Amino acid sequence: LPELVISIKHIAESKFVLTVQDNGPGIIKQQIPNIFARLLYGSKFHSLKMSRGQQGIGISAAGMYGLLTTGEPVQIISRTSPKKNAHHYHVQIDTTKNKPEVVLDEQCDFELSTGTSVTITLEGRYQKGRKSVDEYIAQTAMANPHAAILYYAPDGNSYEYPRQTEELPIPPKEVKPHPYGVELGLLYKMARDSSAKQLSALRQIWYQYLHDGRGTKGGGRESYAGCQSR
Image (tube, rainbow, N blue to C red):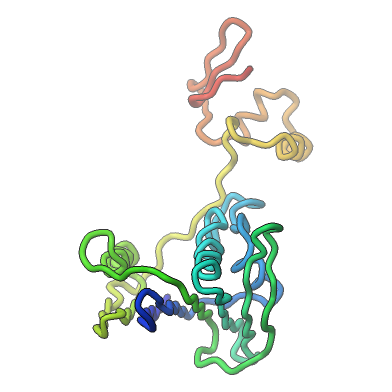
């Protein structure tokens, strides 16, 4: 079950060091630079099932903001097996080419048998109340009762959110593409892999939100599931 440790240290007037550590499966060495220093590198692009980030923007954008405001790269330590050493990276994004630049690549010890630690130095303003980091972490704990979260705030206080359940949520299932947003190449692949002889049959087999009674025909056009073929 997930355990997270979040630390925000106030090191200067408007400069903070943010560290997030988890006990997840870790990240393989080859993927680390792209995950943390390349935009649009989410895990949902080649398979419509999310295992990491959804759009591939969040962590890379955070690291880019840290680089632009402090000049410091993102620091990552990740370990995939207790039998292996952890990989220690310092990476930064090349904003002109959207490619990762590796500043440091070495092996190191890590306190967890598997997991990942990410550190970003950035400028910002710490505030309490609504729309604060404190509130966001509290809401994250509420939305993920299977996770244990320990949070060290920059004001010196610490907040512990114990795990409320020992059951994991149901894993996400891969969803089939909606016809309104399917790419042409994926449509070709779907047609090759299907035994359907007509496009209407292919739709029934593959497309989500499409079932008997939803489609209507008229005037040479076919509209279905909130979409209209052209």
